[in-house]
Image 1 (spheres, rainbow, N blue to C red):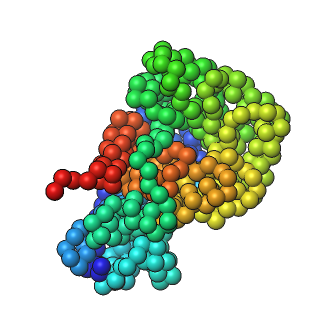
Image 2 (cartoon, rainbow, N blue to C red):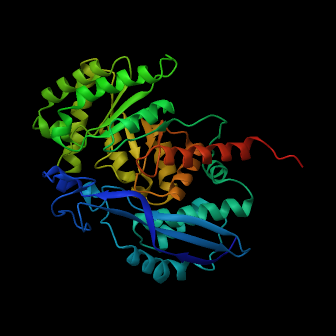
Image 3 (cartoon, rainbow, N blue to C red):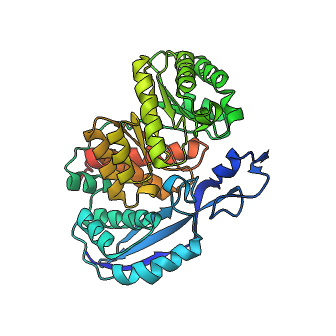
Length: 407
């Protein structure tokens, strides 16, 4: 297959970008937005609409393929993440640097193409992400197959006709949105936006409410979701990173969550990758010694594949979030999921509410080819829209793979 053209254009993400550093410093909410000025480079406001750069790829046969360059909600050089760019600068980069290299390329395989692109071009990871989605789509269309099957073939994995374990996040909408998750029987919930110490103070009460609400809305004991909460480092902030006090709080949290299983994401947020690894490793060791069953989730300070390797070697978490926009090409996300599984830790194929419908659809194909522990519902925070996009893509793809058309 030969690539004959590419178009990049201005687009929108599925939610908003937040300057979490400004929020941690005490920015006050004002309706849906925040008062004050941003402190993180790349932000024009503490909360601003997320952007995307949709790509259209044309193959020599005239087929059109699609991918989106996207960024995560808390972008801006935070914990090793790239600064949020303007969409114009990304469009200019695509047409100025990627297009001259890309047009005329012969594409035989996905992995070999991505290797060549990494060798020849130095691109932001968000651009690698968008281009890789479009190329993967183009290969699948050229082969008259699905993107999941392309990945499974290249990475020697097996696609099974089973549902994915979806995970939903509620953002600021702690109650009505969680009702939606429960009524839809989402397997992992509610994440919650514990992005300040003041919100952390209400967490035990909120866990109690969530547990009670599950049984009020779904008395059927066959529905036993995992409770997953992202603390954004505020547990450490509240207790001055005192590990004894952190572990004691985690004990209370686990007791409150019972009988449901518990995931705790980023209980601390240290000032460097090395400090984060060391502190998370010690917390995990203590949690094990205390006989607690909760699982610690790493997100901050592990944006790249190499970061995950370092954290896994340090024993810093039980579950690792794999955020495709942070890793770069789709191939990097596939490899990160498979590496986690090979090392005996759990991969969580995440991403961001600020992504797009297209990147969410591609994530379903990554998940079908690799079978991660859980898969984030995206884009947006409304639950209904994200689960519709991803569940329907899942069902369509499984139907294409396992149900033949009548001739």
